[in-house]
Image (tube, rainbow, N blue to C red; front, side):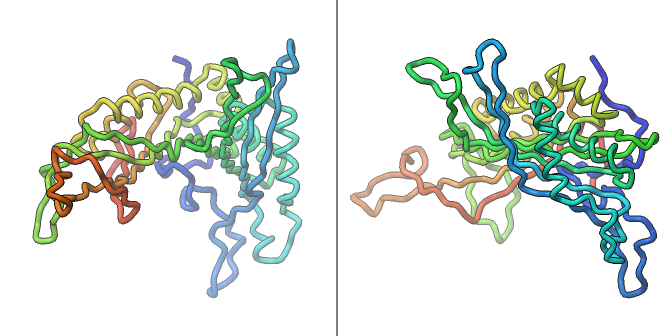
Length: 347
């Protein structure tokens, strides 16, 4: 297997947070010159441009009527020696957010923008390489999914339907390397709001009971949730390593395997609990996709409650006779976990 990672990274903490997206604590820090006295000091800063919408049309070179569209919503934030813009009203270190916006459009024109993981790595690397006082760039991409229309039973060449049943995101961190150039790249991809339901094949019993417990054991219930899964890849040495992974379809494969495993296990497993099902999904995916370092899954439990109807002519509508249910939006259970390839200390 081709390796895309490098254990020798610069300015990246070894115990970087495993949460899907970066936090201030895991980012590069502000220089000591930010100290302004006992009344407070600047300890972290990041700025940039949000909600940059870009759509690119790619045309088949042999038939320009056959086209493909890719649409993103991009947020690009920068970190580095910009503390004086906060502490001394000195704007000279600021790469204007309008410049960042324009750069997104130019890079979309100059480069292929699929997969989003590669576009994010190349965009972030541009800022670290171009501006020597910028030491890291953080790119969030929301993918707008367009599905080719079928007309008269055939795929139309240039007409599409928006798919709003599932959302996909990519988060990319690009850090300055030891040579002063853009180096280590961290990538997390995410699938969100994939709503699923099965009308049987789910149980929940044997849970802890005390004086506050009213929930009854069940061997058969409706199970429904909105899938939210994030998968973090191992560290990439640089954007070139990301390009090599993209050429090998690493990112596309990871998404397809995780999505397939999610639907297969959800549908076929006689689920003992949401916890057990989500763990099995993550564990199977990590075993099948060597490039993934960890997977974080968050599943809200969308409840469908049996409705007693015995008040109407003795109608039976509970237990084995249940057919009519009441969907409830809240309160709802919320179950989360992270499954990692390598053991990490529990908090």
